[in-house]
Image (cartoon, rainbow, N blue to C red; front, side, top):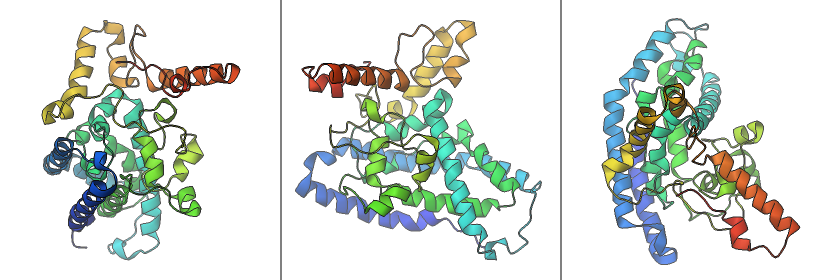
Length: 317
């Protein structure tokens, strides 16, 4: 089977879609794009392509090595086994959900993934904010069970490419809601806006790539609400358009915490959730959400309580 990378063919469509959304934004939502922010996003996309070419061999080598120990064999013409393709796509999307959830719950993985959430704007250029260091965190090992089941590494790579293409279009505010049946099964702009939000009710929700059913099955789904405006970015915003700072700031912060922490806590700063601290001086997404829920309960008991304080409880600087 000849090598085929679906994302290469999709790049012209990405460019056209971004330009079309820019025109829409100029007419309907001028704040949707910020020139410096967009330039950083484009630089992220270019840099991730280069990094993928340099470091992607790690995953390729691991997959090829694991393929030698596969439990099932689809034959030399595996690409003609039509029923294997949809199964591979669904399993790859499940693997994406698991790895994506780990990226938000383990600081080692978050250090690479935070790049994608670093923009305070939500538009199609934001989708290009892909990690430069993702390959180093080795989340690709979560797909190795698929290789051991007999799915060829190229098949997995192609399915992963189409998964990535699908996720591009959901990074927009130009689309409100899709039909109800579509929203029930598939990931959509509405669902993914929730994932990129910093509002307490939305933190660490909707990890899906293509199928939102994984979030509904595993208890991480949250529907977009009309009660409050979504705020994008990360809890402690970058406050800068410096590309290198955007790429490496969390790695620097994590290594600094490990260096200064007592020995018994060093590993926790690597493997615990982002925001965790041994002295409880910082907030995690769980503590922020818990505080928000407490204020909701207070509001129910005391309707006079300031509605803005309920929707937006104090968050760490």
